Length: 274
Image (tube, rainbow, N blue to C red; front, side, top):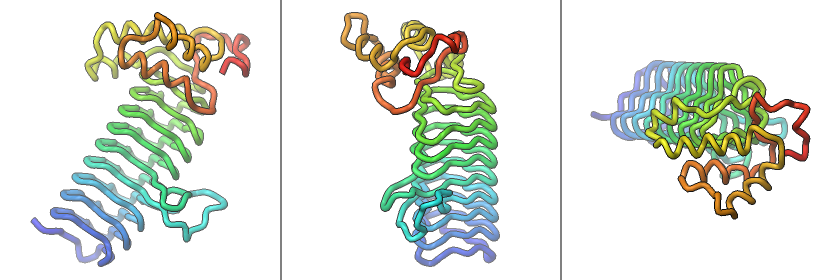
């Protein structure tokens, strides 16, 4: 099967469309775009210059991929990009912006699912199998690990990191880094492990047990978490599982505070604790 382009679609001849690509009515594909095999651009979607789309993707109605960053000092002449992985589903009205930096990329990993009217800002880095529910807003420079779930209407502040397997509840307000494999709701309130996600991904009992202990050790009591992670990793009690090590090492980097347990009284947490 060759490329199929509806007569009303506008596809720049300098774009590159692989075999079996389908472009539906009134869609626009600009110069300098690449679209992988068996991908579909639905009616009225817009693929902007500098966008690379992998294989077997669906770009939904009225979505805009590769648009200009919403940044006051951005120069539109800057050459920057958006990279979309394979088997990514982008539903209607989604917006994904290109990087603000010359020759840099906004990245959406393989098998991600971005639901209707969600937004991914400039310079975000999204791992594989991330789900972003309707209306969620992801600000610039956010880093999302693999298999993260973001609930409907949630908003994530710029430069936040979200670890692998974390789940952010609907309408959550996230301005602090979210460690791997936990659930967060409200404003940066951790509410335990993402047990459903862990079990679905085949986590073993010993891995979940270790994560429960680490959750209590780090998130349920005050103290400096970076220092606590360094101390634990150097001790004989260092985590034994890959999930436990990944959880602990998350606290070694980043410039923001961390989400804390909803059971930790606010008056026990100070700026020095982070």
